[in-house]
Image 1 (cartoon, each protein chain N blue to C red):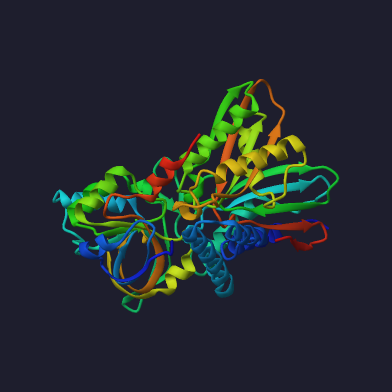
Image 2: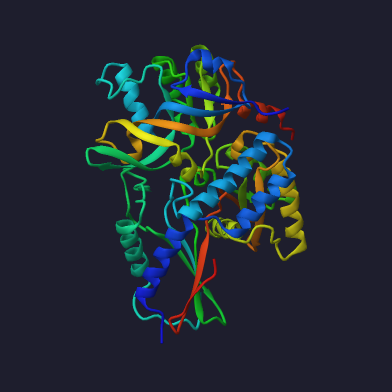
Length: 289
Length: 191
């Protein structure tokens, strides 16, 4: 047996649809925790309203946010997974069918960057990356739609043999520039090293790590903790109107590179939209979240 | 210090706007106008220059950076969802619009810059911060669509005048006295 285009089409469309209507469990837990630690009264009120908004959206199965973003998929392909037909086309078709049927409808956010024309389809849309995973017989699909509010503030700079304080200072510069705008409390993803493109991919994937799960290496985990403390000292707070809760997590990852060291920083808003499923060779669909 | 929450009728008057202080919260009922379109704002600047007639009366209106999805139903419009967009995108055009149309309440999320703060102070206006990702809550407050302007534009770019009941609470992030929470936060940051 093998994974069919029909299954890929249905599952990728469904992952995007569901990602718009509820917030992940770890986001909920992180907001509740932030609420219990927050010293600013307005900030506490905003955090509680976020939880209420998420709860109402899930109960009424409506969108949490009007900016449904553009569909982004991170796909890990097991080396023993088998396909029966086209994968990329199945994802494009799934998005087109979702656009035609989803209720309430999606706003036309897909934008041609050169003409600024907007619609529901375009070159390279949905955005999909594929990676091979050894000793694995399924494909793992994460949907993490990206919208303007938080997408606008990602940044990357390339340093030569930077020390850790230089890297951390740059992350904080980017956070300060984003400031009140990316719907905090945010999840900050940081990718260090590798190459220009790879650092950005590491940063994006770092935002997908469950909130509160530290990096496996102590040196990186300590960096995450230092950065989280520093980010929350900026005082931007929930929705940027002040408070202690500017980020619920800072997740850092790195890759070996040359002496030029790209540092990429990206943000997800308080919702941290994320859904995930695994497709097995026998046709089974395992909904992870 | 306890938060002051004000239940106010919109469009907000200069007098009511001046009673508010940065950090207060507002629950709004009455008429508001929403659009999420930068092209819409540029077109409004054109109206100030006499390029075309206004699609609706916006003098003294409360105009917010809120995107909405509306559907035409049996001659009327129904709003399926409503949610703020980032206001800083509109920094360059807002001072002239605030002063040109006497807007006593503007808003969205993420704030506006110093020239906008000064424009608001000049006309007696506030900036209100809405919850991003609050679509379900914001949408529940809509009572009806009063009118839609520039239907030739993308759905969320159109100007939509709504009647709302108990929309909010939203945070007064910039008051009519020149105080901006966004600037206060930046000023208190230490290296």
